[in-house]
Each structure stands twice: as structure tokens, then as C-alpha cells.
Image (tube, rainbow, N blue to C red; front, side):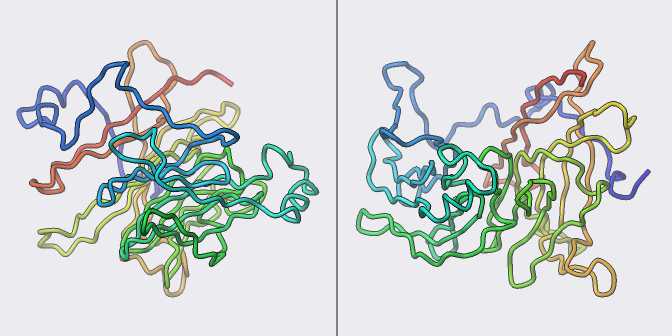
Length: 322
């Protein structure tokens, strides 16, 4: 078996979690919302679409919402109330260049906000597809206003080119970890860390093979570790199985991890991950001939307990023969 596939097989059994004595199902959430139709709140602004990126800022009592060519700051207690917004569109020249590359000028040649993360100085890092030319910027909220700094950082490898391509990212100690495609065609998927020492995966099918990225999470595995283990960043995704018959495009679910302190190799794997490992995730379903495919995850941790008590919840859907 290939080294990258040797980590093991994960089995997610939600029913077993409910039977554990210390199950989080009996815990009280820090914030609750009554489940009644009359309490439902909806936000929408005329002419704006694709509200697809969110960032919870409990320190500011805000829900940050990224949409097509706009970012909104909504009242966390009533998300139908807009407290601030900032527009981030594309120029006519950018739109024309995108159209010349064969993209739809009214649908694809827009700036879709796909990345929103809080930084250590309380600013936010935001990236958009920018008419198939990804760009990133810094944003702040002060005195009831959202402000972009117009830094115009290159967003390649941080944000997808295609506004409808799945990707994942997480900010850890002001370093952005992202899983996306690094080229215009969307054919070169990578897991990368954008930092003073930037590293990424190799362009090999044994690393990533036509992946569909889902989510990322950090685990503080160095805490109370006598062996000096490093913190890890986990990536959940699905991909075409390299271990299956090439005639059948079997899709399997995966989890990969890298070490936060990975600096890349010195002779081989220079500026590449040396700690990258991945494993298959199985969600066993009776009478299903094909593995179910992961679609979303949620990490639940009790701040009063060690990280080993954290739980990942995942959603899977069936796949069909191709």
C-alpha cells in the first residue's frame, strides 16, 4: 500500500457517540435560538446573489457574510439587520479579459467572495475569485463601517478561480492553509500554506486525484504531549480512488493531515509537505455497493476538556455508477 494511504480507515458511527457516557449531546450550547417559523430571519439585498461565505465574529456580535461582489456585517442577534457593507467588484477591463478567455461575463466574470478569516490583529482576510483572477485583501470593522485596505494581494492558491468550484481554507496563527486549484483550468489541485515559508502538495495523483474539497480544521495535538508532537491541520475531501479499477471512476472520502511546523524538505520535497498523510473515511451503509461521499464536517470541542475529546461530525451522500 502506498505510504500516503497507510494512515488507516476511519469509521464514523454517530449512533455510538450517542451511547457514550460523556457524549456532547447532553451539553448546553453557549447560544440558542428558538425553533419556530415566526423566529426565522432572512437577509437579502436586491441585485446581490451567492451568499456563500460566512465568518462568525462573536467578539463584535456580527455575522460576516460574503456574497457576489459584496461583504456584509449583519447583527448576530438578528441577521436580517445589515449594520455595514462594502462592495468589491471587478473593473470593465477585468471583465473583458475574463470574457475573452471564454467565460460568461454576467455569471462567471464577477468577484465571488470565497474566503473570510479573522486575523490576530482583529482585521479580516478576504479573497474573491475576481473574474477568474483571484485576489485577496485585508478588511476591518470600526465605527460601524467595513473598510477594505485595497492591498490587492495575489490570491492564486488561496482562493479558487472558478466561483462554483469547491474548496476549503483555515487561518492558523495568521498563516492561511487552503485547498483549491492553482490554475485557470482548475486542473491542478493543491493543499498549500501561505506564510513566510510557503509549502504545498506535489502535482501527483497519489497525493490528490481529482479532489472535491470539503473543509479544514486544526487540532492542538502539541498540548500536554510528552513526545513533543506538533499541532495538525486536517483536510476533509473526496477524490477519485487511485486504488480502484481505472475503468470505474469510484469516488471515496478522505481525510489528510499536515504538521503545522512542517518547513518542507531540504534536498527532496523542497517547499513541499513532508508530513502529508491521507486516509480513507468509510460511512458504512447496509446494502450500499458504493461508498458514501463526504459533503460537510463539523468539529465539536469542549473548551474545558483536552483536545482528544473533540469529535468530528460528518454528512455523507450516496453516489451513483458513472
